[in-house]
Amino acid sequence: MKKFLIAVCISASALGLAQDYSVPAASPRQIVEQQFSMSKIKIDYGRPGVKGRKIFGELVPYGQVWRAGANSSTKITFGQSVNFGGKVVPAGTYGLFIVPTEKEWKVILNKDFQQWGAYTYDPKQDVVDVTVPVNTLTDKQEWFEITLNPTDENNANLVLKWDYAQAEVPLKPSKIDAVIKISDKLKEIKKIESDAAKAKS
Image (cartoon, rainbow, N blue to C red; front, side):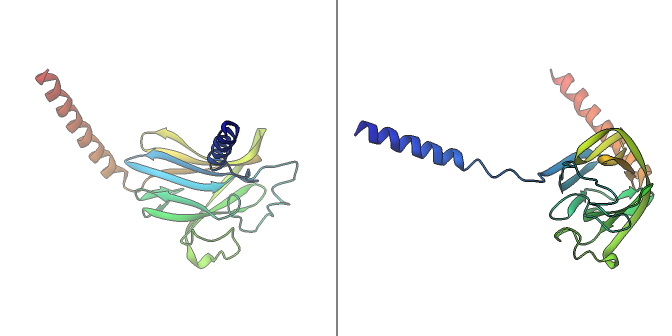
């Protein structure tokens, strides 16, 4: 009886642990969420690996729209209106796509962010597109990566890199003067609150 109970406990424990596991994804999904200006930017994308393949010009053909990742299309959400590479984009969620060439990439924001890959991509749904230069990396980036690199409290670069290629799209608030004024007022309020707290203590 004791052995039976031990076996049952081990089985139950193993079953409970199994619920925390899944088959490793060939292209892991990643969510990047970061403070940007007075709100946040969130990116949800799949990360394919190089795995010994020739990427740009072969696996990802030049001149054709690419999902900027793997599996379902890449989604990017802006918490406030932004200047995306020189073009204003309202707050909201968009599908992020790329049309690569050897020396530059066209980076596209599309209204349809719920499609699989780019198989039903419709250019009529494009909100904006910007063309940015491609830089050659010294070290290979094995897994496709999208990051947000702040340059100051109200500006950042959207960095996309894979294999030996890297491109950046500059981001800033669409109404920077208004954002700075609001930010200054909020800082004043925080200082008043801090001074009041010190006076009580």
